Amino acid sequence: MSVAELLADRRVCVCGGAGGVGKTTTAAAIAMGMAARGAKVAVVTIDPARRLASSLGLRELGNEPRRIDPRRFEQAGIAMEGELWAMMLDAKRTFDELIDRLAPDARARDEVLANRIYHELSSAVAGSQEFTAIAKLYELHRDHDFDLIVLDTPPSRNALDFLDAPGRLTQFFDGRALAVFLRPTGLGMRLMGRGTGLVFGVLKRVTGVDLLSDLSAFFGSLAGLIDGFKERAVQVEALLRSPETTFLLVTSPEPEPVDEAIFFHGRLRAAGMRYGGAIVNRVHRDTLRAPDTAALTAELSGLLGPALAAKVLESYAEHRALAKHDRAGIKRLRAALGEPEPLLVPFLADDVHDLAGLQRVARYLFSAGTGRDGRAAAAAAAGRA
Image (cartoon, rainbow, N blue to C red; front, side, top):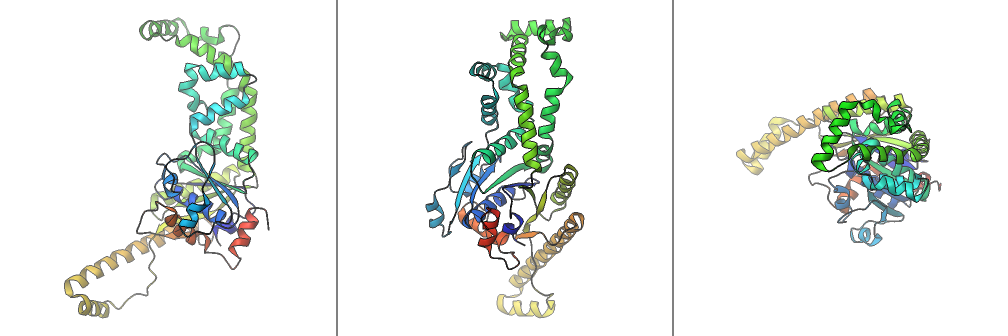
């Protein structure tokens, strides 16, 4: 089965997994492969290394999707029948835009955006990047006509916060602590006690910052946005649970990434999210039959000389050991996930840093089909079959 088949009838694909396993590259290769097959695709990354922009031949990506010039693909020898759009999430800007959308009026919006406390806490209130990433995903899904949106994520134990972020936000706004601050009689600050007030007073004298006043203004301004935030949290959670959304696990055969993939899979199942399949990158493969060592040594010695032949045989033995190690990791992954062979991408000698490299990865992701034409599969994913 190929990625095109895994994504049939899906409009959102979330790529999750451990860090350092090629997740950003995989997300970009999936998006490019589906676009090449006729779909209009957007790929979204929050990877701070900016590898996605580099792979697509761009200096930078912004917080809004940008179409990749089709001529780039022509120059790389890639037939692009659809459209590929890309963006890099700016969590702070996304949260600002969410405030702008949800504020009841311009005055309430400006009060929040100008508040000193908001500048420091805007990411923390949303659960760092996780909620803003889902909020952006929701906006792209709602406001654009993409056939498929591919979302890259942080390392998996952080990416799991995607599953909890909407609920955490709702709990924050429903919590007793926030209710205390929003009380009209002093915003609950009196409950902090006289000692806390003295501390705030000292801070004001030393720094010139009236933290108590800023807190009061912040929570007062926030009051008008609570219903909007809670509604948005419900909407983004519904998108994550939608039949149109699927999660692909990206891992390597190494023990720790496999453990994280298994953990992520369990959390997806427990949360009722749709698991689409697994992709294992950087696989060492040994496709040769067990050699006659003596005969091979003699043949190589005759061709290369004894010293060089010994080094070649040593390297080959190391490769076979790595391949055996990788087979064990893949076997353990299959047993834990209870599924057939995952999609495998071999260890590539060169780092993926351009469109040609993405195309190499895409070939492995899209060539594992079971006889269905790749273009028809992509059309199905785009709702055109």
